[in-house]
Length: 335
Image (cartoon, rainbow, N blue to C red; front, side, top):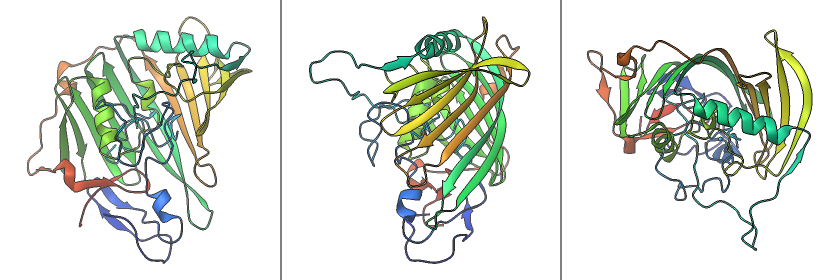
């Protein structure tokens, strides 16, 4: 579907190529809501309306990647709104002080230390699998907040293989990265899109260049939430708490376009457990919340897991003929 025009009720079902229906937001403010790249990525520099500053790489994270500032991001095809199919805008133009000196951060307590430990540990894992659940907020033109829930699993093998599945109200979608190609597949619609992507990072950028948002995807890249490329101006170690029976660090950060929080497991496996991104650039500051559980850092992976085989009757869509709606699902232009 194209840009929304006119005025009317909040919910107007629109057939989606990757789900049952998408929410068609009409009325004043609809344009901003339908723009998945409205400052929801954590990457410095964000991305312009056309994504011209983004490298052709694949991440899953923009709608609220520090992120809604930018999945987990994993965030795509009905998957676009969860860690994966919504890519993270990756900008090559990072803001630097006029003097050319490195950016200055205001980090309190152990925020920088814990964030760096998480990034190093997660980025150093050759393989992992993890289950997730996510809540993606959308603010209507009337100011009402709606939450769209998703859940799924991710299997990753660095540097170039990834599988993710997302289940949500609009159906089930899968993402495959096999070292050469990124495939986004919508089960109910039995339709798929394929784009060249020689690595996971390339795949994430490719998704983002399609116009999709991928909160949480910044956790899948080679350098997860790297402070050198993440939108962060201040950070604080809020304290220790417990999630799913395990002790975690609670970190809070502020950026130019987003505020975000990260909960990291204490101990010798500093894995991200919870991730919340609030998009300040959007009225109502909608939040994207990602909860990660059942981490396996030494999974037994079937080599065929990353290979996509079109099921009988599946139709391949032209990437230029698709677009993203307000909640990150794929729709076919003109349908």
